[in-house]
Amino acid sequence: MEQYVVKGGVPLRGKVSIGGAKNAALGILAAAIMTDDTVTIENVPNVRDTRVLLQAIEGIGAKVKYVYNNSVQINGGSICDTNVEYDYIRKIRASYYLLGALLGKYNEAHVALPGGCNIGSRPIDQHIKGFKALGADVDIDCGVVHAKAEKLTGAHVYFDVVTVGATINLMMASCMAEGDTILENAAKEPHIVDVANFLNSMGANIKGAGTDVIRIKGVKRLHGCTYSIIPDQIEAGTFMMAAAATHGDVVIQDIIPKHMESISAKLIEMGCRIEEGDDSLRVIAEGCTLRSTNVKTLPYPGFPTDMQPQISVVLALAEGSSMVTESIFENRFKYVDELGRMGAKIKVEGNTAYIEGVKSFCGVQLNAPDLRAGAALVIAALAADGISEIDDIEYIQRGYEDFEGKITNLGGIIKRVDSERELQKFRLKIG
Image (cartoon, rainbow, N blue to C red; front, side, top):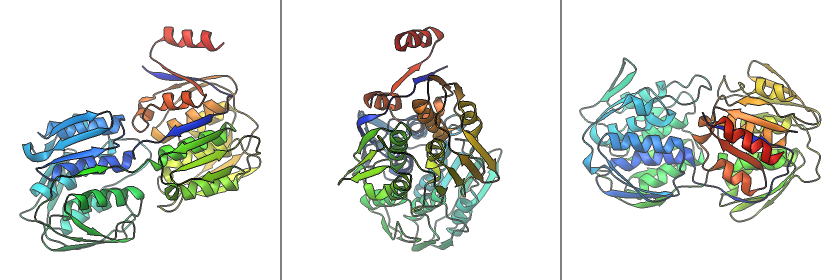
């Protein structure tokens, strides 16, 4: 079993380049099968989730070719099956995007209920509601969602809650439906806009993405294109928090600073300096005293739920009392017990964590409970005194490409090991 071993106490310094957005890539890769032409997608993050989705796409007959490391060509003209194998899909949450893509193209889809991180209830009722509004019959049998329609017809769909997944799924399902579709109370995240832009590059007619009302005019067919995925807001934010926690000085490159505003604002409140470039941010925490603040997660443009564990680590090292309220997922504080073993003082009541800052953490054995919490524990280990070992890092590998390599390039002391011998060798090397 692979694990990370980390020696903390070294400020991160230097430059790090951010890869393509995982959450955008998953929607875009699924949407690519909606044309029979070849689609070239650039800046695809080489992480476990994208690899699993591409395996699932190959499994239904599409042709997938890696052009080079982060570019993929997909041709959906050879798809021969609308049944997506459970073995692939149970590993990732974004499997449900294949429902919208297959239903939109073939008027039929059979996809196993999704897996992914256990961070709380993430029902697909809004997806089903939308598919039915478009004219599909939908039922769930033995853990598989079956959706089928004689034809899809545009409709007015009002989401009861803001939902990224259902917004993306309904954009895909409706872009070749007959007539016009209006999605109200739609999610506004950057990856919603990216998926819409990609579909438009294939010939779809989608307007309003990035606002809470999206209007879609159905088209008869989609065509091939070449498209580059936006930078990953959450990977960038994770390195921003790592710079703050270690009192480092890091330039985060190849990003869209506008997407980072809610994160930058909180770091400035906490005493860090932020210097903004055209496609970069510099986080300077060297010599600064971290201060407490309050955070509440909200849909974009609010503070991202996917950054909640990372900022909690930094606040646990800040002077004073902080409060972190999680308004998106109810089960996202599972990392708190792990931080407590490092010396953090955090008390969770309901959906709120009350944090009393401490001067330092100590290195211990840790278990990553999910993707973002796992990244947060790596940040904690980088800031801690001594050596930490982090197990279950397959969660982290779901969403971060070459995480340990990028940290190492910033001066962090981290290694991925898969045996006791490698672990002891690393411990001896770093003393």
